[in-house]
Length: 255
Image (cartoon, rainbow, N blue to C red; front, side):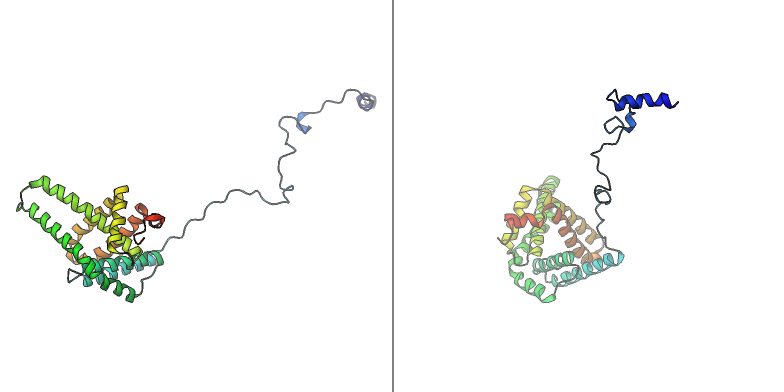
């Protein structure tokens, strides 16, 4: 047995043909681990750097949601009281939009004095908008009751125009809420440009306003609540369809 194994070993040592080596033990054979493969020891024993998953964003619990609903109801009540003279409706909505935006962004209600100053300086500039809204409402009521000729087609056309104008006015309220120093003319110009570039940016707030209007007519006692929550919905919708970045990007109302 010793003589049988010694001959191949001697031949190998003398420069003969090398012994066949199994591919499983060669460094270059198929199925063998590559010498260039990274290992934990080559990396200093550290674990592989797998891509980490993004941590979920913290979501408010029921207490935060309840506090938000309470604050929106309070804003709606104050806006309703400030709009009782009717001619102050636009000024009350502008101050309410600012309060909702501040609560929406900072998690707390704003100070009262800046809102009062905004309310007072917005009364006179807002009267023309109140008169236009009143004329449109009277026209729609007259068409619905058949007091004005035209019938259903004219009623639908007038209602569509009124809804679109309501969407533009809602976007203007959002612009004023984002920047209380924005003049009404500049806010309307910005909202009209947003509507022209992306009509859905005005149609979506208008649809939300129609829903809030009919809800308030069905249950008049909910009018203060509807106002606060509608302003909140207008800001949320506008942040998606007409975000503040587009305003700062050259279309700022106060620019």
